[in-house]
Length: 270
Ligand SMILES: C[S@@+](CC[C@H](N)C(=O)[O-])C[C@H]1O[C@@H](n2cnc3c(N)ncnc32)[C@H](O)[C@@H]1O
Image (cartoon, rainbow, N blue to C red):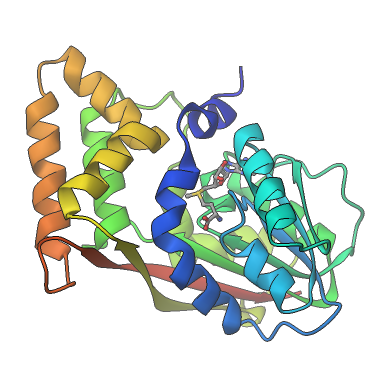
């Protein structure tokens, strides 16, 4: 079994993505999408950025390793009447179904960063982008003090050590590593820019309920709770996450959650 696929099919990321829809649309609005642009949304989940891309007139293909998320994205696009937005299963490390130079824009928001073999991922993203096209990635940053980097850090501290040779997804949030991976795919450093940007998680209930959503539906946190429960540390993990979410809640109300998360926005001119 592919552990990467199993991790994301284990939960139901659509439940987490509900809190990311506004930022997804706001992010897409900055991409300069025009009618008829050919867009690949890689690690698309249930279409948080793919649907807004299609609403702006792009022809969008969403590719994701998780079958349940491909099904959810397809259903959302159908409900929205977006015939220019399709979804299919695929692995960012090997996009063999997709021709060279096929897309004007490849977008991967907190998606391709989770694939193993990052050098293969960079090579594949460059291969399917036409010369003159662009790649835009959003990647969480290791040791960043804001929400998602901290959830992943806390979750991994309760989880069993990863297998030997495992490359942390968070390394995609380090500029030097990003430059090295695209250089190996043939893109010079001057064609790659990295800047900090912000996503907002909005949830219409208290922070503890958003923690419960992560605990029940977000693969990395589900695994952490399984390991913590086996070690009698479940309450400790829950308290640590609740303190994080409550401490970062900027909504001004205890009954509503609104939390900023900083990420590295990577733009590559191919
Ligand atoms: C944090 S979610 C982000 C989803 C979506 N981009 C969004 O912003 O809502 C990470 C996504 O990457 C997908 N993913 C993980 N590894 C992948 C791989 N090797 N190839 C394609 N997708 C992958 C997961 O299935 C999941 O949908």
